[in-house]
Length: 291
Image 1 (cartoon, one colour):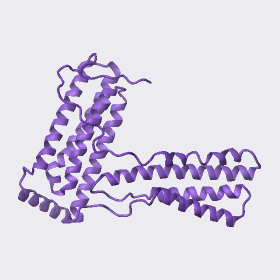
Image 2 (cartoon, rainbow, N blue to C red; image 1 turned 180 degrees about the horizontal axis):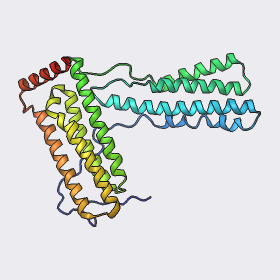
Image 3 (spheres, rainbow, N blue to C red; image 1 turned 90 degrees about the horizontal axis):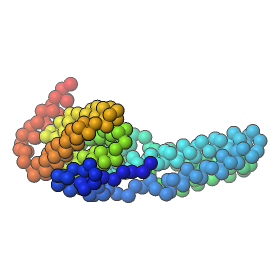
Image 4 (cartoon, rainbow, N blue to C red; image 1 turned 135 degrees about the vertical axis):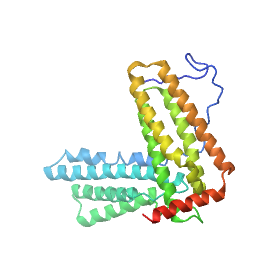
């Protein structure tokens, strides 16, 4: 389906919109899940083809090898995405599931089963499986093995920040998924722009976990409200494409962008009292430990 482009000077565009669109590529990196990980989905195809060219034993071995390697390719790609999210954040937990390591085992195991299908001995199959797993690790590396925090910040504050940002990221993901149902590319770009602004606040809180107290409502209540409003908007707008409803939602996005950007600026300017924040953090910690 073709994408309709719009803007300030397009038909139906907002002629009074003077706010320039931010650079959508700012702070973004090229994805690691590129050609190499996609090739992993192609490598098992010969095993699937060979499986239907021989006896029932060959069919079984071939399908097992194909399934293992496809599963390994998928786990590897998911592991690369998880590492990108980990690398992009200054405060992060290590992935709970070592996806790339599991991918290496599945790819190696699939190669070994494929060798058995080809009539090779179990020794050769084991050697090929081991070599395949090591080559996979050499190409894609290991999963992050440790939580990542900031030097001089204790684990309690790091854990608070990680949980809050995980919650915020979940709201942004749900918001993006909801707006996709509206099939309006201009609104999708607006939501992407708001997500970028919200993540700037996330990075600011990660850089100084003491800012979490001042930003907690933004990462939780306000983002949850934005998510719920987006879901309700899509439910209404998808049925009648009412321009008034659309204008109200765009106005909401503008307000959200302004408020989140202002909060980020205020935290960076350190306009709040460090003493009050430290006291509030201490109170929350004492309340947590007294549960």
